[in-house]
Image: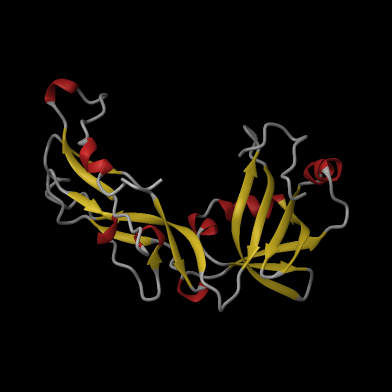
Length: 231
């Protein structure tokens, strides 16, 4: 795992739409931390620090360290975040406490590697498509990976890579692949593009492949006046 991301926070007593609006005007972000068999607590974070950390992919898929005040630290994960529709402003963020002894479900990114070196990647008229960019896993916090890698170096035209092909670290399980209702799904495939289609036309996709294994499976705030229900 990468270095732990630490976020500074302060407990806030003044809650509600008006209070949250004032905080944003002061360059702060209203937040809530919940879970871990404890009561929810309202927090305040610094907008500039949160925006900076939120630029990192790992911010959304790893365990964060929330520094509340000068002494108290808490391990958390991001559970929800609302951005302004067009301004570079985070309106509100929810954190969930993490217990070292409890299994955590969290979505982590999928990194496709070496596709340019594959036979499909070197073949003219063949396009490699990614059908998933992240996947939900379950693991103890200490085993949560920053991302999962999928090696496409051997992929050839017409090949399809399934969810089950992901090489999982020890102690990590893909939620969709667990239990009696396990579902295997395509995460990438290599398809031919008809020469007559041109470069601006989407390549043809075999819908049967995309639907394989899927049978049986079943925001941003509009304006600054709105608040999440847990405020």
